[in-house]
Image 1 (tube, each protein chain N blue to C red):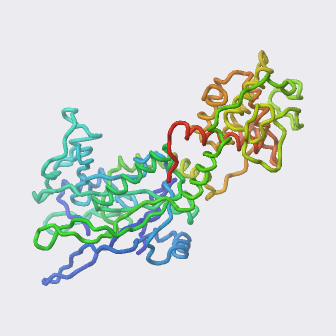
Image 2 (cartoon, helix red, strand yellow):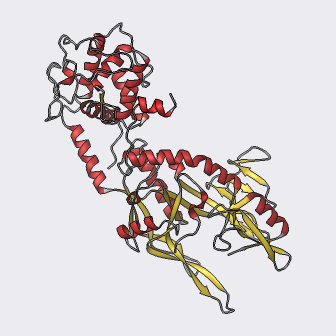
Image 3 (cartoon, rainbow over the protein chains, first blue to last red):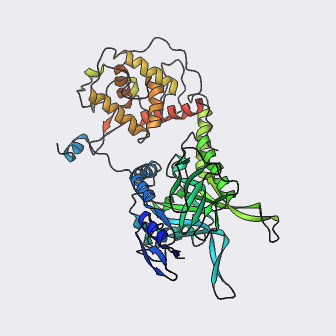
Length: 97
Length: 417
């Protein structure tokens, strides 16, 4: 389902929102009755819904920490392999000392 | 049907699929237009991003086309980081309000202006109660927009062996209440540790009250979501509880101690220099390893066998520390101690701090007195592996784990059944 919005709502949506599925920018195209159709710029009407850009930024900031914690959890239960420990000398060499 | 673009988000911990309980059936009106109606299923509908071909193949191989139960792991210990149960209102494809049923947490006005954020009204700074009529506002046509229940749960499917999650979607208030209760129960019974616990996501039939055709309520059988502990894990946990309950496994009173035995050679005579740890086996009773490890049965404290019970271990460490009184520990030795204790608990700092407080009197490795650090290093006996990294002694790992298990029991926490 593609959203049909008036001019103000369409501009506001393009400014503050991205696609809810793939987080891509949105596009608008003219619709009957001096309205606008707003949809995902990448996948068109295959994707439904919008989320705010602020929400996307927050999720992206948290994602790295989430990945670290989830990876650690999976390593603890033996689903992911634990990387071999590096010696003090290896660590210092990697740091450039 | 595969989802396109789900993994385009560029997240380090990506969502690669969605798990739903039903589908939307398309029906035709008399005028030729179409509309959709939700249809409940008795199995899970799992859709992956279309590019996740390997994960799709693995999932289908393990669970088939119509899975009725899926093994899952929760990625975090904090429930709110992976479970979002809210009342949400949508219009024109976007969320315009969110509530927890008591307070409005987020709300946009009709012109898109922010009215409520983080549970407080932007203008007044006061909380806003959830509206009694369940109406969040009006859409651009002036029609009321109502809140609806939404639940989203992030889960990891262990067979996929990836740090990536699927989202379980539900709009059933019964599911949301059930999952919230179950997650809280797991969290409480397992002392706040639910990440990594093997669980099973199932659909269970239950008679619930639903709207009837004539507007009255009728009871119908619905297949609700249920999260249950994996039976194999429960069995292992019960065996562990049983083992701890046996005499001499840390729950008995410590034996009467005679005069402390002569400790091992002082640390600085073991050939240890700052930043290094000797690979030779120092003398001392901490190194009386036996291949057969019967449960520790403290007698008079002199001849207790390893693995030591927590009480005996703590006493032994304190005795050994008296031999190191006045001897300073270097920052490298303290760091080695912390590193070895971290290795014992695979980086779980909560467990490490608890055990360190019990055995050495302080949760942080940097607060433990020098003599206890040296005694601890004797106990941990770090040895180099083939890669040059230090690893703690296996017996010390076992004894440290027993201290953690005993601490849970002593705090009155019941093991998850």
